[in-house]
Length: 141
Image 1: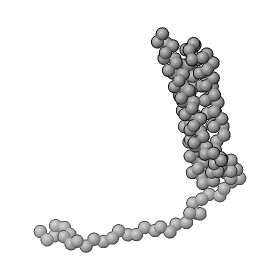
Image 2 (image 1 turned 90 degrees about the vertical axis):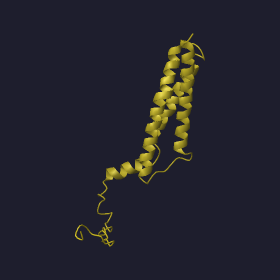
Image 3 (image 1 turned 90 degrees about the horizontal axis):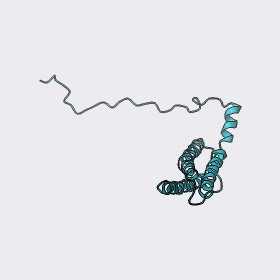
Image 4 (image 1 turned 180 degrees about the vertical axis):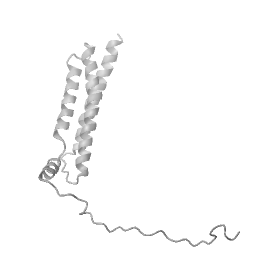
């Protein structure tokens, strides 16, 4: 029974890994196109922000265009635009900000673009919710 295994408590340590690799050997040469693209992506995405503002304004217009009662088609459209399209635009805006932040060269606006974009989208979502409530009241009559 003495040869059935190693009964000693002494174990050999695993071999050590090499950790002294050079980062610059993994980085490729920057072309002028990559440098220009990196410089363009240093600020928040103005296009996604303006699309979110436009979506919120359209939702507000559809809320007040026919008053707080009237055409249920306007209110249904306002609910879809404010609650669904506005949420998608906020996600795309935040994704673009996160990608630009991870590049390491991000320069934010004076007011935080994340907070401003979230406020605009949340406002549009609330206008959309109001449109949905009015739409539900109108079709239940």
